[in-house]
Image 1 (cartoon, rainbow, N blue to C red):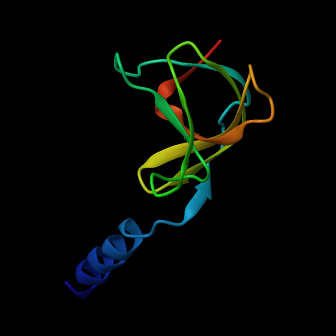
Image 2: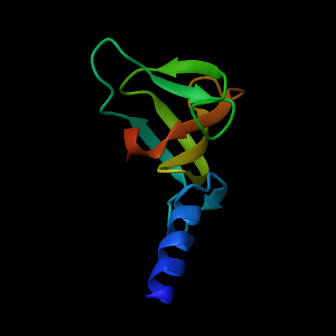
Image 3: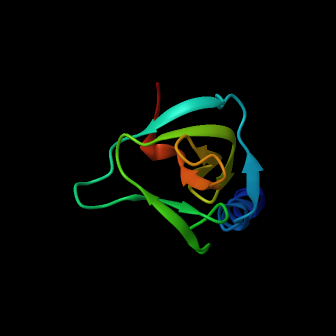
Length: 100
């Protein structure tokens, strides 16, 4: 019983961690923004999380180059640059990218 309680406590502590963890096996390269609802934009942020400032909004079809990704909480965030304006670099959610 004691081991079960300790295991549950450890799981609770670990699930509350918001540290970023690099994700293995994520491909680098060119990807396209997709799956964003009509009238909305994928937000490119200054850091890997929704608490960071929005740099620019990207509509479906925008091509980005992914450099690396990391897990923050329940979301995989990728460092990316836009294809059209190479000087623009930020973080986007992996959930809205597909390889091209």
